[in-house]
Length: 619
Image (cartoon, rainbow, N blue to C red):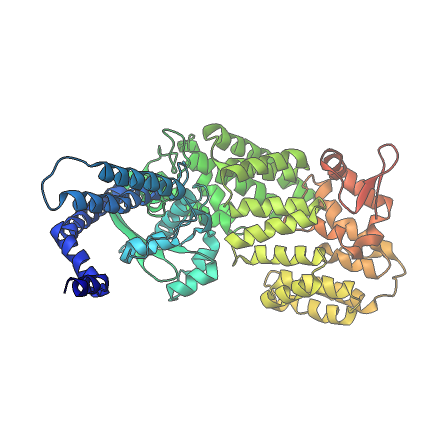
């Protein structure tokens, strides 16, 4: 009988053991202790999430708290096993050993996943159990991969004439966000492509390569303004944050600062500011003057027609408010651009250079003096020095501007063009690619990019880009490429199409260049009597008068206006210009333009090298 009992106990089914384990779990109240702990931990974590959003705590705080709460569960289970059945306050050696081991293991796990750092971690996956806004935010906010597009704020004011104000606020918020380190902000012009389009947000995000979008509206009535802003996850359309700002118009700078900081907090981005520093500076401007500034910005950006109108607004503005640095920087830009639109003759260009470049330098220096952290001042002073042929100083100023604002598209455009005209074509192409990542839809930047691709030997890709755009400047570039390939009749036919695409190009402009192209490659009999072809002077390369190709470039240099817009001088480095680079006239132009001085300090381009004494040669 006893033998049978012993045999039966040695073969107890597993289910009995599981039943015994479950009985012991119930007896020690492990489930009750665990559920109570989970409830308290969940409440604590939700409270921390709310406080973190309100006080812009970094994501590391929430990760650390969640990990600590998770690691606390095994400790609670251990305590329940020893104390759940009775209210014993004595700790056994086994209990202390287990808890100590759990604390050691927990500390190791905590150190592995939440190492001390002043930066927001970028490589942690979000907990699978998170949902809603918290999950979307955790899944998308790796700072190294965050890019944002500020879409045009809608004007919901009763007065449609207030459109400039809503556009200006959009621009100002975008500029404030651009100051945040590690945050890539899509350029204003490309974002404004969607001003009147009813496009799906996910499609916009894909087109602009933006992970996040900002939408908003502006209502201005009298002395009050109401701005509504929302931050949206581009790939899902999920709203991560929104806020309404209903304040006096005098608080407009504070509103912009609050918006930028709230967005940075929602994205878990470090502001990178010094104590007491703000993203939006220069607040000492009354609402009326600020609105005038916002009116002037799009005028100056519109270039040829708008620049004089912008000057008429900005000059009295800085006279009334001499301490407002952004207005001085914008006025410097308008002054520096003015000579570009007066190239009728050397005399006319020189008149405008002598009048406006000193004004531009004074305005840019004033902007830097008032706000040494305003990148625009350095970019505009760099533009002035480049126009004067002082390339070393221009590059130094451009580098300073880039260190303060790496998202300033206009500055990147200037810098890349300067590198191109100095013969640093590969570096110029790389910077232009960086620019197009910010501003993919600006026609001028796209044209510059195609030109640099051609200069770097990517001819097929350049032709495709020029054909896609097809404006007057792009057609002239296609004429240049076809002529270099010896397709002279095709080039002439395309040249005659330009007046149909560009309203500011009269038909008579293309008649003589087309005639000469149809003669090529036959040399003309009297090259000294050839007409001035302006930007089409490259045609002289193919009719036996390569030295005449320099005339268009020399006119600007004679007037003291160097490194002119776009990549005009950069074309001198294309293989088709080899006959030009062999003559003394070319060397005289290069010396006068300041290139040799720059090369001796920074290094020679692949096309040129020093020879004996102060001489040099370009192959």
